[in-house]
Length: 110
Length: 112
Image 1 (cartoon, chains in turn yellow, brown):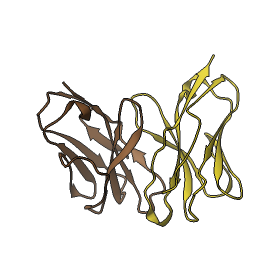
Image 2 (tube, one colour):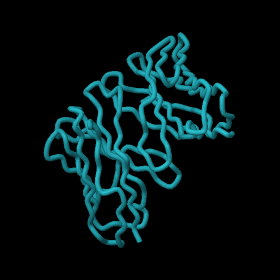
Image 3 (cartoon, chains in turn brown, yellow):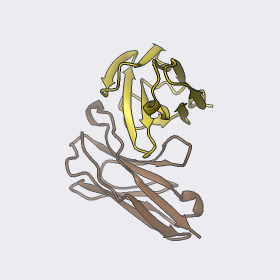
Image 4 (cartoon, one colour):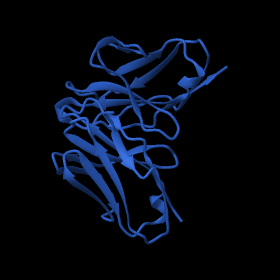
């Protein structure tokens, strides 16, 4: 299973764009890249998923370079309520389960 | 509401006791999971059930036993509870392609 590496923590201010990069050098051909968000005392919540290039939804954008060895989650104009832990997961190809890494703790300040 | 629901939300018990946590999903998903999140907030997969068949057992102690009466339910039984079992336990489910997980709200287990 592909291992992921992402920063342990990041700080930002309200209104800024936040980019969190995840490395996954041994991603398999059929693997997808998925990001989850977890607030304290809650279960992780699906944010976005992609396979290659760029994916955008109402919450975030996901940028994946051609070699797929990394990905960047982009959160536009963050607010205080975006303070959470963000997990990058790689898997799902060939029905492989996804494993959680340590996550990135994002703190948004006023 | 379509969701993954688990009960109880909080569970405080003494060492040596046996307890169960229940989980139900009404999403029609094929696979259900149990995750453990310890005090360091690391999420570790414990079990995975696909159509009532155990397909992952991540070297957890055999005091932990998942029970799946049907595709929509995956309960977690824990025997002879130990202090180190204190954690938040999350139930989750996914469709057959395992590309998207839906998590329950967690059960905070405290062993005293």
